[in-house]
Amino acid sequence: MYTVLAGGVGASRFLQGLAMAVPQRDITVISNTGDDLEFAGLHVSPDTDIVIYALAGAVNPETGWGLAGDTFAVVEALQRFGYERWFNLGDRDLATALHRTRLLREGWPMHRIAADLARAWGLECRILPMSDEPVRTVVLGPGGELPFQEYMVRLRTEPEVQGFRFAGAEAARPAPGVLEAIREARAVILAPSNPFVSIGPILAVPGIREALAGTRAARAAISPIIAGQVVKGPAAKMLAALGHEVSALGVARLYAGLIDLFVLDTADAALAPAVEALGMRALVTETLMTTPERKRELAAAVLAALEGAR
Ligand code: GDP
Ligand code: CA
Image 1: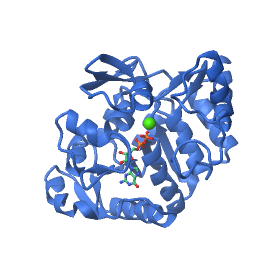
Image 2 (image 1 turned 30 degrees about the vertical axis):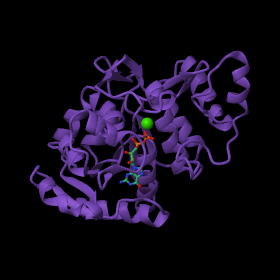
Image 3 (image 1 turned 180 degrees about the horizontal axis):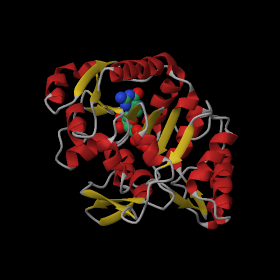
Image 4 (image 1 turned 90 degrees about the vertical axis):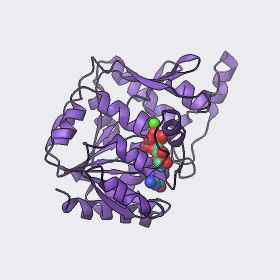
C-alpha cells in the first residue's frame, strides 16, 4: 500500500503518475480538508475534489482544478442575488457540492462521503479526508485573520502571511483508517504540495505527525519548489514571508525528522548535499510534471528510490 498526503493541484499531478506506476487499489490518499469552505450554503472540499477529478481523468487540464469543459451558469446567476463571484465553482462541480452537502445533512461522516464520491467517479484507490471533524486553515496577516479561501482566491494571496492557524485541529481526530494507512503502508509520500497550507493542516491533526514520525514505512517528500520558484501558488511567497530559505532546501528543512527521502529537481542538484546533511537521502530527478509520461516517470523514480531508503 502506498499512502500519499495530498493537497490539490500539485498532489493530483503526482497521483496521476503514481496511478500509472502502481495499481490504483494500492493507493491511499490522505486529503487536506483545511481548504474546505461553505459556498452558497454548500460544503465544498476543493482539494479532495481536485484529486478525485484528476484520478478520474476529468480534471480541467488548463487550470488543474475543476472539471474539464465545465460551465459557470450557476455562479453567474447567483450574482443577481448579491453573491460575489470570487469563488468560481463550475456547474458540474456544483453537483459534487450538492451531493456532499446532502449527505452531510443526513449525518454521513466525511470519510464515507469521500468514499462515495470516489466510487461514483469509478476510482479504485482509497480517498480519506484527514479528519471527519472540521479543521479550517486561517491565514494570519497584517489585517488579522483571514479564512484560507479569502486569502487564496478573493485576495489572490496578496496579504503578507505572518502565520497560520488550523482552527478546530486540537479537537479533531484522524479519520478512520488514516493512522493505519500511515503505519501499515509500504511507503508514505508527501506530495509536491504546499508545505504550509496543504501538508501543514494534515500534520496538525493530532496523531498524524506522530504516526508519520514513527511508521516503519519508507517516507518521501517531493519538492513543490523548483529553482527557487513555485510552479504555481503561494508556497514560495510563504517561505519568504516566514523567514525560510526559498528553495527546495527550505522545504526539506520543514520535513526534517519526518522523511527518509527528499526529491528535488535536476535544476536543484547543487542542493543535494545540504539536503542529505539534514539526515535524509536526496533523489535528484525531473520533477516538472508537464506530460503523463513525466508524471509516471517521477512516480516510478520515487518508488525505486524508496525501496532502498529504509
Ligand atoms: P493546491 O492545494 O491546489 O494549492 O495544490 P498543492 O498544495 O497540492 O500543490 C501546490 C504546489 O504544487 C505548488 O507549490 C506548486 O509549485 C507545486 N507543483 C505544481 N505542479 C508541479 C510540478 O509539476 N512539479 C512540482 N515539483 N511541483 C509542482
Ligand atoms: Ca488546496
